[in-house]
Length: 432
Ligand code: SF4
Image (tube, rainbow, N blue to C red):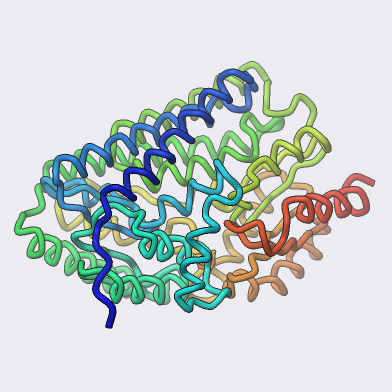
């Protein structure tokens, strides 16, 4: 067996410094352009910049690095002294935003190692980044067994590539009391393993502070979701993606709370002035399943060319729940429940009703005229729901487009192809 992959300081700084520069350049470019739709996106980028600076500092200070899957929000881990949580998929989430081909070398590295093309690019992307020695150091890795087999396999492979142990917590099939008790049990086991591995103890007061900040973030995110029911919709279609990604990275910090509150206040300000991302909304869309990461501009294009606002997206749908911060027991119980209810963990497990219930709720409550469902090539969960989605949209007489693409790699289906498919559908079935 090959020797475990070690931390490569030079490569890490090269890749993450490039990433930081890309974030800063995009912020500056957006500020210079001055499109009001980008007001909140700029704030998200600033929070990501802060997050990256914090990562560099943690590496410099020699903090213990705890990698966590994106479906474990980091607020819980902030209670461990001298431990820095790092979202394993960070590069996958953000690289394609700044460069549509940004994740390709990592996807290719994973496929060259032998991973099949139909593994999710999120998993191929982070495994490729490990193979290319671009990631920060890892002392321990924690992940839930969700949202899919691709992620479960990806983390098992990660365990073979690096020295640090990888712990996977079993996510229950059902959304019920027995399920949450099982998950709670696994979260407790995870906490004890982190304590043992890092020779530390959870500081519950510190954890409580992070939980309260995370609650404030979610409260604002949910309230902003409600504002998106308004017409005109205050915020642009692309914002939801940014909100979710920023939440994955900054949940449980002052930065995350401030950002979510800024977005909510901006939404209220615009609503009070009866302003929105579009002055006149010709069509209100729902995009339910991940957006093309390399082409969030698809939402700008829909708004500019067709007067079509995406009222809500899958990532932008705040389904997260709150955590009672009173005691360690209430924190762990509600953290387990919250992690069962975040985007993807909630919809892509158990029976298809879990996905369909959310889909129908949004369809019926966000004043939507037509629906785009990204038919992600690698996502078996998503593919399996198409029949139900067709039926629900037919019953409600909502035009539906199932558009196939890879969410993080524009090579299988190009940006031009995605746009031309949407354009043809809009012109023949929606704006007639
Ligand atoms: S998009 Fe589908 S395949 Fe990718 S992580 Fe989510 S559930 Fe898994």
